[in-house]
Image (cartoon, rainbow over all chains, first blue to last red):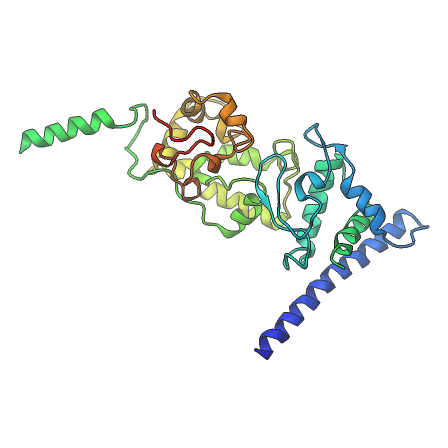
Length: 135
Length: 175
């Protein structure tokens, strides 16, 4: 039992490290993009997440269209109807637990909603917003 | 005895789907189920995980070349996953599964035709869905012809028989 608890603790710690390391790397890039960069902001991230844009499919959508606003609940892909697991790492422990997967979805989803890739600042802000909802 | 055999033979010919395939007769129903964990995870996170046996290798190759604009969505993959999934699709494509009825029908419907951009654009699929009223396909419970599992309740097992068909707000399908 103790072993299980211990390994779970390690697991959650290492997941926390993945997202922390990811944000640290993004902040280095953000500083290169904008020398006046002074940290990521959940409020800016919320605007990025909730504002509608003409996306890749030529339709006005936002991140909310597929992920909803309650990150502890699953939601449906706006176009295909496929269930998307919760965005909250607390509700869905595999979320934001692997840098490769975070890379993949940030690239894809900025393209899908904004029709361009996100800047390091935007990516950091939106990730900061997502994890801020767990706090 | 021989007479009975003849009747059985005639009956099976009468009830066989349609005779428009070439080569040997497929012995298995449906398509080979998708079992590759990476494929199911990567492709199945956005849409129904179509079995590789629903398209020939050249069509999968065409689709994989354009993942950045995958039906107007960015579905690009990490390089290692791209290679693994491309190989999986190539190795399990329709023409390698001609013992499965649906794979065989799809391949035969494409003879002499251009490489299709999607499963639903293969002549066999167009023909099979042609009598379904458009509103039943576009309704919110289905969304589009791409959503196999919305009506074919056993699609995830590779079975697409009329018996397992339930169209939302319509019900069973009688051919």
